[in-house]
Image (cartoon, rainbow, N blue to C red; front, side):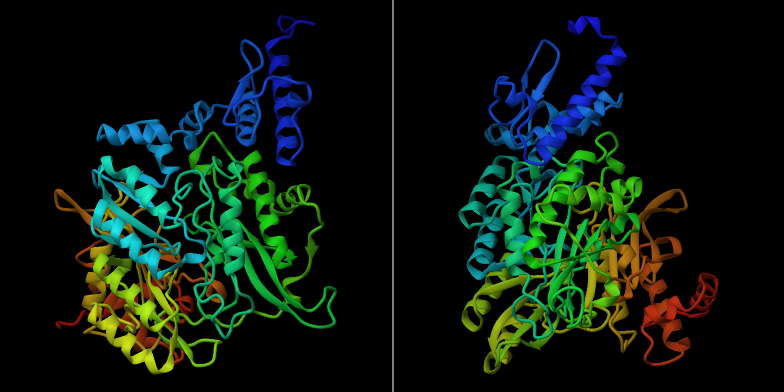
Length: 606
């Protein structure tokens, strides 16, 4: 029978059937029908023509093309980004990036997405420049690398870096002509930017105190590193329906916020006399996306450490195959889980594994050691006798290059030459001998930084804001500092407080997780629009897990500090016990009561 003898409906059905079969074979590491039939090979980066109107995808990118083919066979329309990736894989566009640099011009249209695959984000109209994101597994790097990044930021960027909520660094204010130089200079340092943005697996995070924390259950550094290199060496991990986050929490004093990731691995201990051998395992969690008001959920699965990377790989492959490629707003893992249910997703993942998953009740695991809410600051004893780590407070994550060099020098002179970034936009210097702690503290202060902080400033988190991001509705970093500067002389808190300030619903600063969270918005002021925020209370993570509820809408940025002061004064006055944190207080009372009490308070005149 000739192709012309089929009806359109039959052609569509057959195309969908074949594409689905091919996709499944590729996801499971089997040869495609095309290759077994001896059809022509491609160069490994895209489909080959099998006939006048049909492409047969092969090679490591086949999984993406087949998923797109199946979407089209179902009568759906690919979103613009998927169409762009279908024409040409962004990782094959290095020459285009170099040509843009030679012509001193920034990307337009589809190239904006493509260049993110090299870690370069064109952030206009906020700034007519690139921002570069890096990859550093677990957020840990050497003083040499830290010093080298400072040199790159000086030579090609704005002379500063930003620590992010993925324990990562951003270099900003990069000119069009300098984009490739930033990427290659970083690679010379052993730092990769490949796939740090766009539809890829972002920087893999882990416990900031991995390997040195006396409370930890397991050192997550080997796992974060193994996952990092697995991603880099498997091209099918690139070109997902949307971005993807993976985190490993080893049970130490500083949380990795793994429950906010698409995949979270949480260390637990199983005691004697259970259905599995006693020891340390990881619980599997799926579907965290705090900007969409969802935490990752425990899947009832217990994993040995060596099973984590293969399981993550299989989870990503199922997402590759079944994620939404028609609507970017619904293209995250959460929405596949919502559509299928968690049980089906885990079952489909298990089909791709060479071993059976161990189902084991969470209740039979010992709870992880308690998180120290502001354990990322101050001086802390390590598990290694006589050694300490010091948390360094960075003003909403920003560092000058001189400060970077100074911190690198301190790490080299007094520590092991290790810099550890945290998801709280600060960093740690580790392996400091007890007799050198005072010298490191003095060195930090000499750089204009702090090693300790008030309970107001200790976990003050802010995204880039509209000074460097086109999506943000407010200057979050400036406003966050104004809030801290206003509150500190007026209030003394006896419990740590997390304040998260984010500029848009993408929630890079995770406003829903803060004890107090602020979401940027425009606010009417007479005939004008000014920068402002919706204010939320009661968010948390880990044992305090919860999504913040909205307390106030459309508060002008200039009024926000006084509004927060009134909230905190009402808490101090009305809490039932000195043991109650702000979160304890707001979670005990309905919104209307809280609003009434907050309104009774008057801001101070300091």
